[in-house]
Length: 147
Image 1: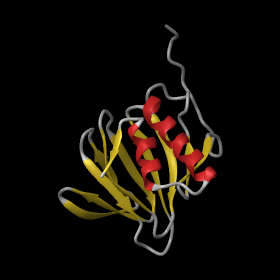
Image 2 (image 1 turned 135 degrees about the vertical axis):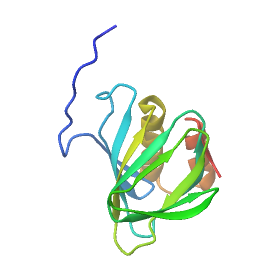
Image 3 (image 1 turned 90 degrees about the vertical axis):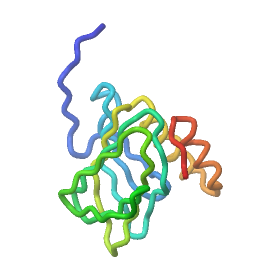
């Protein structure tokens, strides 16, 4: 087994994706072992419906703007500098209810599931004319259940 290597991914480096209308720059594909890291712009009015990651923890660090986090315990606003942790199995979603884009750092314990899911969503976006069921199927294939 190869020794882990220190990795530096530059500011503009990474895989640029369009996730259903929200730009995402995946920073960790192949560079951080099992960790998933992405710089995610959340446009004004954009939202991610409640969902559950069956196997993986997911975290967010709000760099700019604010998000409204939806959980089973209710909605809470997380502004710049806030850290959000959603353990595997927890239902969560988020939305940007402000007039300007927010920017978050997305982290997950499994690059092997999350990176391919976002790549699939990028392909759906590029194809256009997709149904909500297509999004649900793409997510389910990687252990994420919408709803």
